[in-house]
Length: 358
Image (tube, rainbow, N blue to C red; front, side, top):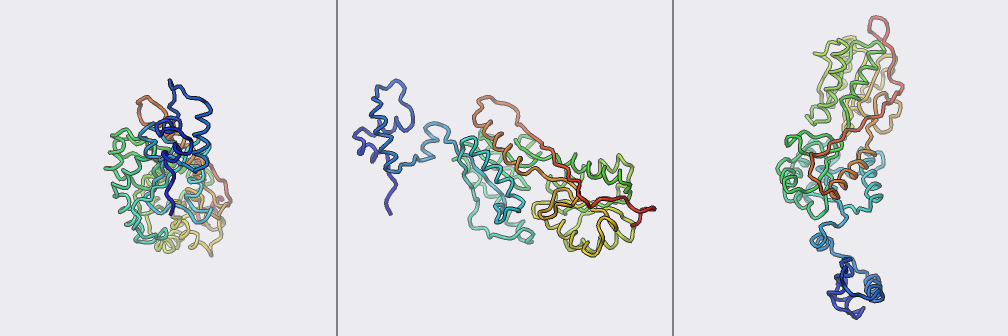
C-alpha cells in the first residue's frame, strides 16, 4: 500500500523547503516575505499529491481542527430512518455541516457485542462501555464532544470537565453537582399537559405505565404526571405503575376491571414498553373502550395522542452549544437548555362514559 504524502513530498514537488510548506499549509505566514507564486505552487503540489493534514498535529499547532466528536454509550446508530436516534443524528450532521465542522464517531470498546434494544444483556453492554474510561478520554483528539445515553459515567466525564474540555450532553443531566452542559427536553411540562388533557376530558381513573429503569428522562415524565394529577386532586397513590413488558397485558386486564378509563405510557429509546401496551390492546376499541396517550411518539403510530420529542432540533441545538463552548474564550457557568415538546392531539383520547366505565 502506498504511504500517504508528507510535507517533505510537497516541498520536493514545489522546489521549496519543508519549513516553507509547513508555514503555508498552516496559514502562519505573517511577517514572512513570500511570493504569491510560491504559495500557489505549494498549494497546487499539496492538492495534486492528495495531502491531508494530520488532525492531531494540527490540533497541537493551532488548538483547533474543526472536528467535533460524538460518543454514545450504547449501539445508537440506526439501520432505519424511523429509529429513535436517527433524527438526533441527522440534526447533529446537518448543524455540523452548516457550521463547517467535521464529525468523529467514537465507538468506545470495540469488543462489545451488538445487541438488539430490549435484549436483557444489552444494559450490561452499555454499562461496560460507559466504564471504558480510556475510550472516553480519547475524545480529546477532537475540539469537543457530544455525549448521549441514559446514564453518565461520572469519573471520566468529571475528568474531562476538570480539564476544561468542551462537551455537551444530549438529554438533561443533574449528575456532578449540575456541572454538565446539556440540551435536553422538558418532559415534566409535556407530561403534565397530557394528564391535564385527560382530566379536561373527564377522566379520573388514570394509570401511568413507566419503565422499571431509573433514567432521568423517565423520572421527569413521572414528575410531570404526578404534578398534574395532584393539581387535579386525583388519587395519585395508585397512578404510577412500573412494569416490565411481559406484565403489561395482565395489568391492562386488571385495570379495566377496576374501572380505569385512561392509560398513559412512557416511550423510551427502545420503544418496547409502548409496543407491549399497544399489543395488549389489539382487541380493545380505542378510545371507545379505553383512552390512550403516549409520552413520546412511537414510530409508525401518528394517531396516538401525546407529544413528540423534538429529536432533530435536539441534535442541532447540541452542536450549536458545543461549538459556542469551543469558540468562546470566557469562563462561565455550564449552559443548560430544555426544549419544548410538540403536542400531538391524535385520536386516542375521548370522554369516558358516565360513571367512569367504558
